Length: 295
Image 1 (cartoon, rainbow, N blue to C red):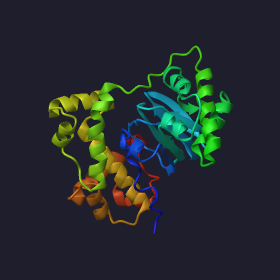
Image 2: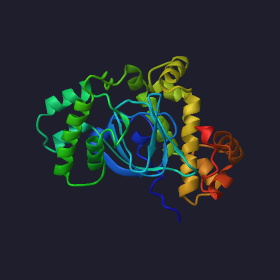
Image 3: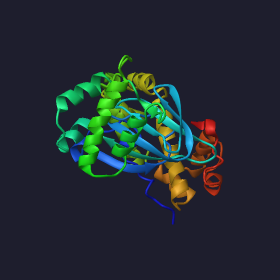
Image 4: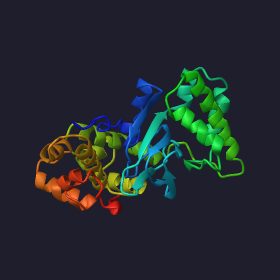
């Protein structure tokens, strides 16, 4: 039996992270996952450590190469994806959290000052060079990996301070959510909820959740996500199928039904079109033959 621990990713890893994360916990992680090769964003701060592999991270259109041991920071509402290179998937250890809520729960001092630094002074993001910023890289590792909460509190406070200091003289990032992102959040949540139930949501359902007409919703979605709602749903279906084929023993028919396809032949055609290889061959090769330009 294959390891199933990667199969059901928390929803905040694959689309706009829902606010209910804050209702459950200030922190989610650490979690070990493969690439997420389609454009997505979260409403939380993500810190990651590359456990193995190499590739390219794209953050707001900027390409950033990474390799084993590199670290990454993704601020709320930054659109990003990652692509592995070299014939095998990279693996990342991520932790996601609301930094101010987490610091508050850990009893950190000077929250107002840290909040001001976090939301008005940051310019570094994406892959952090260990040679250019060794202390920041080490602090990210210390916060992202499991450890004593008091030590991680001190490291997170220090990380915010160091990021702000390194950002001196640079144009700060816009870390407040854009209205367009918040408008789409109900639809993005519904996509993941539907896929978890083995069905594909209708565009009319998604647009209604955002209080928009289908035509307005399509335009708003494409403007924010760079693809149509239908393309996004289809890609989410294929990426879930991809994980199931690699990490479970489910039959291709069961995989197809789990991602909302009643017709397995239609699923096979779409998988081939997306990844350049049929589902059975993809499983047989362990995903190594995936067409890399499919993302």
